[in-house]
Length: 116
Image (tube, rainbow, N blue to C red):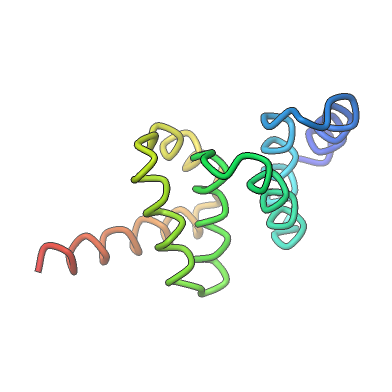
């Protein structure tokens, strides 16, 4: 993760508008346990592209991880409204096991409450 972060940071310096490099940088920060820094980077990227499902989904995880269920739900709803949920499966590969379980449990409970 540190090497990926350094490479992604360099790519962001070369092209500040490159969303993929910002996401890669945020993913590396997350993997290194720097969730707050990842959140800041993703928030900045979201301000440039508010309809980016990959950014919204990552921010949703970070909100759920902090215990901000309402905020996480709102971000997940935006992903669903945009209609591009294809980013969710690859993101699950990036999440740590405990965070993956948190998201799966949260989505399962929300789905059950909607069905009821």
